[in-house]
Image 1 (tube, rainbow, N blue to C red):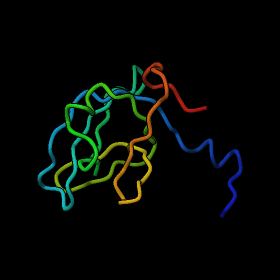
Image 2: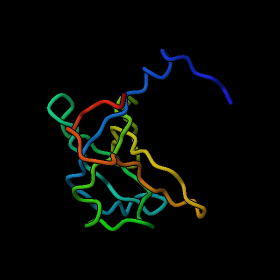
Image 3: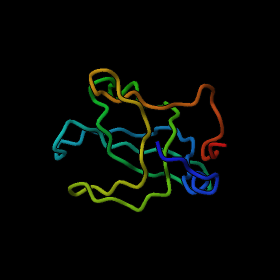
Image 4: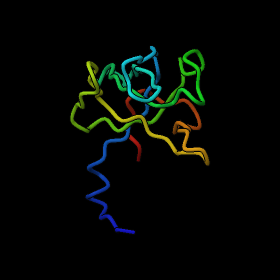
Length: 112
């Protein structure tokens, strides 16, 4: 395992945000959703695509507070532009379990 310095870690901007909108992403190569997240006043609403359809319905994602990496450059995925990375952990089948806050925090709060 490669060790990081504290300075390296500080470069990754992990923020809490609340999912406000979820749509199917039929153009994606693998089943995915288009997801919009409110990251608070400073960052506003950002969107991403995520392959989380195996474990989550659109309805159960709405209102969920997640942890996202917000300082990657935008990434073109088909006709959609992803603006952040939704974080999670793969289960034994490779399905993503979304990383969430244990309790509600202010949207946009940075992971410390």
